[in-house]
Amino acid sequence: MSFKIDAAKSSGALTRRMTLGSVAAAVVTGPAAAAGAFPPGFIWGVAASAPQTESASGRGRSIWDDFAARPGAIKDGSDLAVCNQFEQRFPEDIAIAANAGLRAFRFSVAWPRVQPTGSGAPDPAGLDLYDRMVDAMLARGLQPWPTLFHWDLPSALPGGWLNRDTAQRLADYAVIVGRRLGDRVPGIMVLNEPGVVAILGHAMGQHAPGLRDRRAWAAAMHHQNLAQGLAIAALRAALPRTVRLGNALSLQPVRAALPGAEDAADIWDAAWNRAYLDPLYARGYPARFAADLNPLIRAGDMQIIASRPDFLGVNYYDRMRMIPGPGTVLGATWGPSPPGTPTTGLGWAVEPDGLLEQLRTLRTNYGNPELLVTENGAAFPDPSPAGGVVTDTARIAFLRGHLQAAAQACAEGSRLRGFFAWTLTDNFEWAEGFGPRFGLVQVERPSQRRVPKASLGWLGDCAKLNSIV
Ligand code: FCB
Image (tube, rainbow, N blue to C red; front, side, top):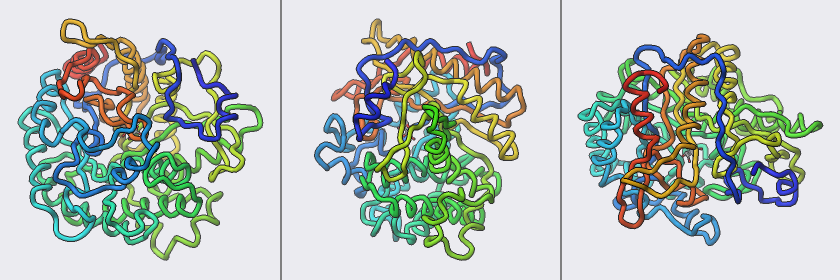
C-alpha cells in the first residue's frame, strides 16, 4: 500500500514515520547501466547511533529521555533505558559485523555520557568507553567512524538548540572527543541530520524536544549550522589533517506530489536539504527564509558555517513528495508517491534512482565533493528466524538497488568513497519505538540475543569482493 492522499489530507498529524497497514513487495529496479563494481578502497560499513543502541546506564539525561517520558510521544510507549545495551555488548556486535566481512563501523558518541550536563569537565568513564570501542573496532579490522551528535542533546543545556550558546558547547565537546579518539579514527562526522532535528523536533513536534514553532525551528537550524562550523574549525586546529571531517546530512530529492504543489516542494527542498547543504559551501541560506534567519545571524556567522568539509555524508532513504500544508509551521507537508510505488514497512517509497539523482546533484551543482553514503536501509516486517537465520530478502533487494545506484554514480565520476548500511542491529527507531526493524541483525527482547539476517552475510560478501553479489 502506498501513501493515500486522502489520509494525508484528513490527518493533520500525518507522519513520515508512520507505519502503514501493509507492505508492498519491494521490487527494486536499479539503474540499468550500473556495473556493480566499486573503486579500490571503497568503504563498506554499517551505521548506528548511541541513543538508539546504548542503554542509559552511566550517562546524563538527554532531551530524548525527556521526550520519551511524555505520554504518547513514542508509538509503543518504549524509552531509551535499555535499547541494545551496546555500551556493554559492543565487543559481540563488532565481532558480528567484522566476521560477516564488513570493514567500517559508523557509531555515535553520546554527548551526555562524555559531559553529563553538556559542558564542563568530561566524565573519564564516558571517554574510556569510546576509547575501548574504537580499539575493539580496530582490533577486528573495522574502520571506526564516530558521529559526535546524533540527536541526544544533554537535557541540562539551557534552551537546547534555541540557545546560541549550545553551538559553542558542541564545539568544546567535539574537541574533547577529537583529542581522545583522533589518533585512531579516519574521520569524524560532527552532526547527524541537523535538518531532521530542526524540522521534526522544532517545527512538527514529532521528535525531541517536541516543539511546533517557527522561531524555534529557525533557531535550531542556524545554531546547529553554527555548531558544526565552530566544531570543524576547532577540530582542524586540534587534529592532524589526515582525520577527515564532515557532517551526515539527510538529503532527499523533493518533488511536488500534485500539480500546483510546486511551491510546497520548493519550501521543503529549501528547509530539508538546502538550508544545510548550501551554507556549508558558502552559498548562504535559501533566500525564502531570510525573514526567519536575519534576526539570528551575527557578523561572521556565515563564514564560520561555510566549513567546506573534507567529505559530505549523505543519508538517503527516499524522495519526498510534497503538498501545501496550510496551518503547518512550514506551510508544506508530505503527500503521496505515484501510484504503484513500492514502499517499505514504514511506508517510505523504495526509490534507488533517487539516490543516484541526489549523488548526481552533488556532483554537478556542488563541485563534486568527496562523499560517503552514511545511511541507507529499510525497515521491513522480517520473517521469523529459521535455522538460526532471518531470511530478509526484501532488505537485500532494497540494498542491492541502492548499491547499484551508488556504483553507477561512481562510474559517472562521483567521488563516492563508501557506503554505510543503516543499521547493524534492530534498535530504537525514535518516535516509532522498537516496532520498525532496520537491522541486519535481529535483537530478541528482553533476552538481547542477536540473530543474524541474511542481509548481513550478503552485504559482507559484497564487501569482500568490493562488488555487488
Ligand atoms: C535517520 C536517522 C537514523 C535512523 C534512520 C532510519 O533519519 O539518522 O538515526 O533512525 O533515519
